[in-house]
Length: 271
Ligand code: MLT
Picture 1 (cartoon, rainbow, N blue to C red):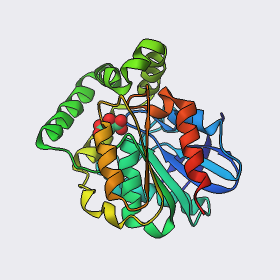
Picture 2 (picture 1 turned 180 degrees about the horizontal axis):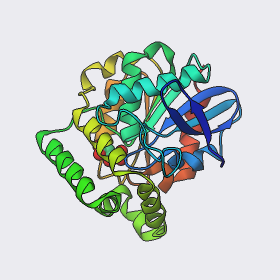
Picture 3 (picture 1 turned 30 degrees about the vertical axis):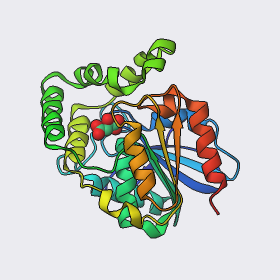
Picture 4 (picture 1 turned 120 degrees about the vertical axis):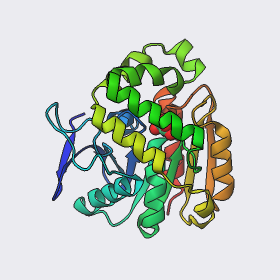
């Protein structure tokens, strides 16, 4: 799929787009890129237009490209980036969804721009902030990428990114994921880790989410386990919970058909 580029006032955003109709924006996990959503973009349901941007810093628009503002980016920055892209594309409203880090961004969008959401998709993510131990692990990850680069991050993260069924039955996915991680720069990775470390706890305001929400998670996800999804789904008034058997953390890539079917069913309910 050929990527598109949105030339905003201060930066350029790469995104994939497919389909036509009402908009669904899909935000990727750490430390991947918009390419994570290609399986869904190849099967967009009729009446919908799927848009998957790179989160600020990720993949960029070419080898030489370095995004701006990476030192200070927070989830609020990433949420503002989503809204800026929506404005650029003339989209007043959209369904906004994300997987893991993308889910943190989607929650941040829901917090500041609830009026613009037709729906919310929270995939393999969680509402709670990092614990003290989690924050220390973030610092260790920043040190790792600064000293050894993206490949070391890929090697550290890969075993946890997919479930045991995928590791057994789709071993080739590991190589594809590593290639995706390694397209990113040290600066992008460190920036995203800092933003995740600083993110606020969203648990308290989940009950105020008014739009239909799909909470979806791989049953074998060990990074953001199904219990996190169950907790979010019980706190959000109009939530539907779907657990995908045989999938781990990157459920949309590990079980692409089942993920797309669940997403399509959810979208068909949105009036
Ligand atoms: C992700 O998949 O985006 C990350 O694992 C999320 C996190 O580290 O909190």
